[in-house]
Image (cartoon, rainbow over all chains, first blue to last red; front, side, top):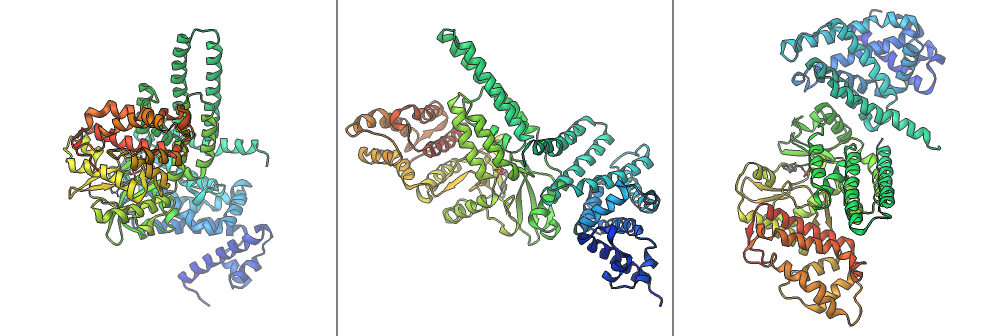
Length: 230
Length: 410
Ligand SMILES: Nc1ncnc2c1ncn2[C@@H]1O[C@H](COP(=O)(O)OP(=O)(O)OP(=O)(O)O)[C@@H](O)[C@H]1O
């Protein structure tokens, strides 16, 4: 049976969502490919057409959700009116919005991919990373065209930095328990402000603010709770 | 963090107090007095430095302390003002996210237009302009994140800081202000106040903005935009303000008090607007109390009568907790009530009151009320009454600042 490209894309997402759903009840390590396939109402044989290994579900999930987010922002009603850093901010927020329902799964994705650092993850995320960096690169070019910023030095390096930043923010978000994850929004905002100020040459003030915010919301709060008898 | 700051304030204030006591032990009285001034100035500094590190409620408290004239030294006041200028507004992305969390849907679904640039930075939040999908122009007050979460703990700590102060006035003021801040942090309460005032005032020609309930929560208040300018803006631009507006603010205060039994604690030039039709509009109903106890209204009313009825006034004071001995009524009336009333009558019930010339008088009235608690028969008097009085004097002070010249007959 031949299936269309669209159907393929759909099945791909269905399987990922199935894995995410199951991981809410059970540890990902304990899941079988058969169980995931049956949750997605597919045969075990079919799943291997999409994901050759169980691990590829993890990288697949990140790739799928990031490309969805990149797609989604372009049709956002406010996107065109936004400047470079607001657009990047929107990408992260859209991504978080998308993965919010799968938070438990994302935790496991992160645990497997970044914390335990499976070597293969690095290489299989290459494509995702490239997709993301291409987007940032294009946006930066457009921002220069709009006279929003001057041609940044080390553009390639900056794109890489933004990718790392995105990955880092998700990690932060996974641990963020503030109402509506507003702390994450503030971290993104302050960090992107740093970038803006950096571009304008007035760095110190924002670094201080971010440091202050992190200190206030995290380090000190932690110390405070540690000091309390539970 | 905040509790740490407050803890530090408390500690430093306590140290200041101890060193004051140690220093004054063997000093002659005159020397002790100047030490005392020095200590209070220092206490002010410590409070200021600590409080200005707290964005939300700390600043709000500072702002209120600054409003209490004569409480803080001049250089401290100037520093407080500059602390306000230094607040960085929340960026558009953060505001949008807060709105999304609060309203439960993306703002594009609620507003056809939303201006990221805040038009006013208030102490607990910031004000934005927007247009509803239905076409109405609105302003939104968006509360800074975490204010509501932190406020109770902060206020508790602040009160414990306050109770270590030897300056009775600062101590009492902090307690009073704390209560008001707790009200102000709930925007739904403010929405209710707005609606109560609006219902009462619309037919009487004062514009109170309509609340858009569908876009309001505890932390977001959306109301129809008033076209016009605040008295503050008009003053800054050197624009003339007609005396009918001043008279209207005067009526607004007293009629609200007597007929609605409600008081607007913050009658200042940022909260009154002149509409594009030339009428009065009132905004900011955070610091408002609706449903004042009957005896308070009764006494306030009795005190502005041109001729005082001794029996009624005494009854009014007693109902509010004044301890006037039987047989001591006439003495109390002569020594406490009459002098106050004589001063008050130069302002209220005056067919041609030049407020600018009354500055000293207003200040004296204010001091009389503040010092009431040192009179044993008034020590138990309801503290809320003095808050109502103070709101009244804030109105007078505002009118004096603008040099209003109006009839104040009621
Ligand atoms: N309905 C309205 N229409 C037009 N402007 C408004 C309206 N409501 C508020 N504003 C503007 O926003 C400013 C701040 O609003 P408001 O006084 O309600 O905030 P606030 O948080 O209570 O401020 P503060 O605590 O500093 O007094 C007002 O001075 C006024 O300029």
